Amino acid sequence: MVSSGETLRRTPLYAAHVAAGAKLVPFGGWEMPVQYRGILEEHHSVRQRVGLFDISHMGEFIVTGSNRLNQLFTNDLRKLAVGQGHYTLLCNAAGGVVDDLIAYRIEADKFLLVVNASNIAKDRAWLEQQGVTVDDQSDRTAALALQGPLAKKFLENSAALPSFNIERESVFGCLCWVARTGYTGEDGFEILCASADAEELWNEFLEFGAEFGIMPCGLGARDTLRLEACLPLHGNDLTEQTTPLEAGLKRFVALDKGEFIGRTAMNEKGVARKLVAFKMAPGKCPPPRSHYLIRAGGRPVGEVTSGTQSPTLHCGIGLGYVETVSAEVGMPIEIEVRGKLFPATIEKKPLYKRGQ
Amino acid sequence: MSVPQNLRYAKSHEWVRVEGDTAVVGITDHAQHELTDIVYVELPAVGDRVEAGKECAVVESVKAASDIYAPVSGDVVAINDELTSAPELVNQDPFGKGWMFKIKVSDPAEVNDMLSPSDYAHHIGA
Image (cartoon, rainbow over all chains, first blue to last red; front, side, top):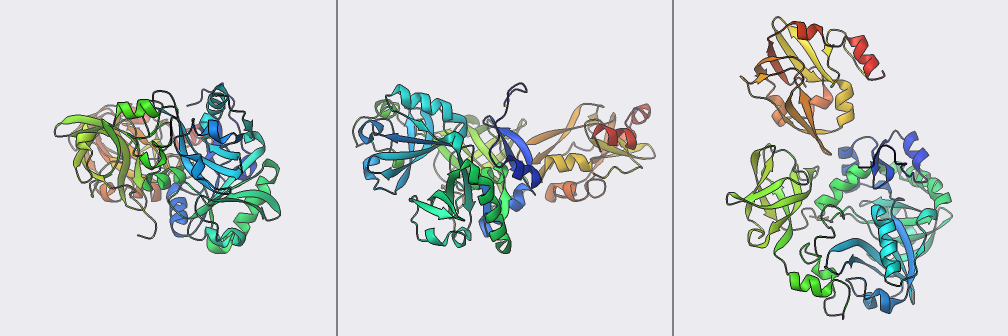
């Protein structure tokens, strides 16, 4: 939490959030909407129709030099053609996760990195320390996420854009980067624009989407949506003390591409614990929360890193690190809540997959 | 925000309705609005002795768990079992079907010490 003396930053959409009746909370140094009409309603609007998020707090860096960059990221930048992006991680020498991010190749040797809000300064310092020149565009860039099965109706010019691709596109007359990405488990777009254009775009999307039942959505729904889709949150599910291999992110770690920071350490460390997804038993169980103890066979085997009540699955769900021998899909576990044990089961990730 | 006139209030946003020697307890409209979508309620057991100002129940929204404090001391003589399967009643009808538990009041003076409706309305800035 941010101490009361610290000034919270506001996105260019702050006034629009206040006007829409948002409940604002501190998040990663920013004053952000946690909800407008209600987390459950907003959650369902994204699963069933479409929702609009302000993600302007996220950071945007432009960097060059693919050879050096490829020694810093876990994924292999050489796999990206111009216009393609992928999920990747920045690790420290111990194999711990400094941040998770999306890297897009926007020119032959130029990359756009979209990083977590609370890690902007840290990532920038880390990259610069490794000899990378960072053009930090975060302060003059706003970002909106349009998510849900109807999102493609809003951006007809980008309706055929493949997943994790990005293109320069005019949206309601504003020049934007439009990417086919998101953090909800649904189809959708993340749209980066100049800060000065943010409010106009926000209002145009809401107006255009009225007939589709669009809702502005806050961080509360963003969290329940990403957790159902088992998308990790840095600071909770990924930290500088956990490796991508422990987090089950091996497919984003190109162990065969040559040396990169953290590679040796994460390999040597191995996977003594795994980030698992679990569901609480049907019936009445309290929602799991981060730091709750996970037990199996009468002893502690791990800890919850994220948890909530799933609006789609109607039960408690969570992610947590569990020692590998107790981390098989289907294994029964117990979650300790205020001194009482509640049954849960380790499940296959993701807990929610669209179209199922 | 609704603040019914026939109730007494705690600064921690519980309400009490006195029925003879029993106090019916719930949380206020203001509290349910601040907590947002309630998805789980953990109540004391019938027979538990609760103490004024001490936590004795928990409500959980999608986002967080919050303690509920006993507004007066005494023995729990009834709980609202319906909240187990329908915790959303606390949001929908906080002063009615969303009641939480009943306490056999051990010291009636504690009820008199609670906030009046107008004092509570002032407390929440209504």
